Image (cartoon, rainbow, N blue to C red):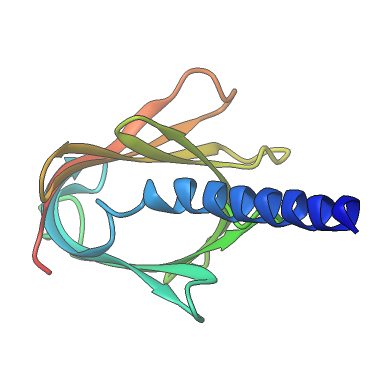
Length: 169
């Protein structure tokens, strides 16, 4: 009887420890959750926009929506870009992958990595397709830097657009 009780207590402890560990990666997202407004500059020109991160489906996924606009110039028409990203959880309940869709018809699968003050999305390598990297860097409370980069080899990345955003909600 004591052996069964000890086994049950051990299994319960392991279960609690595993569930406690799964929240640590989710906690990496707390500073990024909410609604943001910012400005940036890059290949499409100078522009501004909004993005948001929110939990959905009983906190089983994270939804990112984005809208940005770049003014017309002598050489380019006005650009309006909208996208949707769904961050999903692996078997250990850690948000480790994402799929991205935009109004230009792009679909990108990302793997997510974490550093102390950043969350980075790196696209999966596909033949004859650039590798994309999207990084959110925590600067200070309610202020982030967003950088979108491209690479042909996955090593040498060039910044396509970069900007700062302030949390609005």
